Amino acid sequence: MKLEIYEIDDLEETQILIKCQKIDYKINRISDFIKTSYITINGKLNGEHYVLNLDDIYYFEAVDNKVFAYVEKEVYEVGYKLQELVDMLVKTSFIQVSRTVILNINKIEKVSTLVNGRISAFLVNQEKMIITRVYARDFKKKLSE
Amino acid sequence: MDKEKKLFVKHLTNFLVMFVTIFTLMTIIFATINEYVYKDFISSIDLLIIGGVSLIVSILLLLLLRINNISIVLQVIMVYTILALVVLLIGYFVVFVYDVTHNYKLFVATTIFLVLGLIFIIIFFVIRSKMIDRSLNNNLKHFKERDRK
Image 1: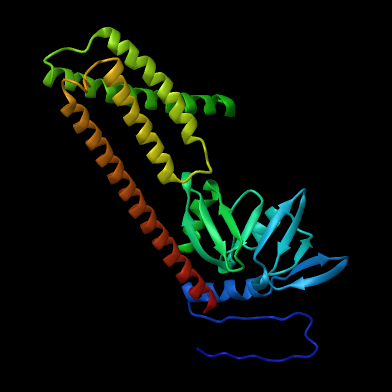
Image 2: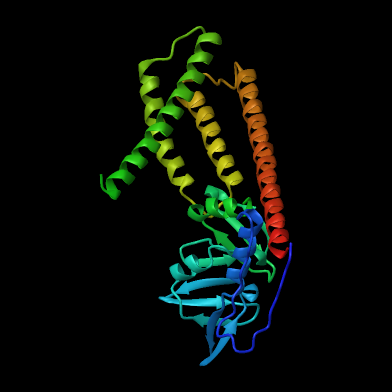
């Protein structure tokens, strides 16, 4: 495989071109990675706007028609609806785990099954999230993909 | 069919399944004991009382199974214990198969088997739960490793 990277000063938008004989699993993975790497989330905290790195976000939570992004210590308000985030982050490590929460799987330390098909997820920051029965099947499917 | 009607049918089906299971279970237990231990038949009044008790126990168990914040092991233990107690109480007070004075062996044997059953259920669910957790955590580990690459 040959990789070429060109720096062009006056280019308006970064372009990535993949030339391959056939689109296979690896190409799809690279494509997904590139697409998701450029997703940025704008968050608002104390009136200031910040660009949030997806890898730093533990989960998104919808509260009273507002959606918040939880990073390790801060909570940012984001300007998206929860369903917009679900659609946007479908190829990432984020997955909806309840009616109001989208969780970053990479921030889960361990999981434990609960009653009625629910799953308890223990995050690396010691928080505990409940994956409800409705979303538990998709969660298991995503883990085994 | 609208949503409420579907929900009603679902609850009704759950109730009927529960009721038929409990009623059949108790009828078989007491009919077998009556037949093989006392060479007797179970009377229609006993059957009516068993039916009534099964009705109450079914409603109680369905309500119990709707409680979400208790673990599955605890739920199963509670269901099993309630059923075991109902069997012993009906056997003692209604069908009179458990005579602790003249035939204590049957009562002791039933209690021992019920306790053994309970221990078996607990072990089964603990092992099953641990296996599912292990598999899920392995998948989680693989997912995170894959995502890092």
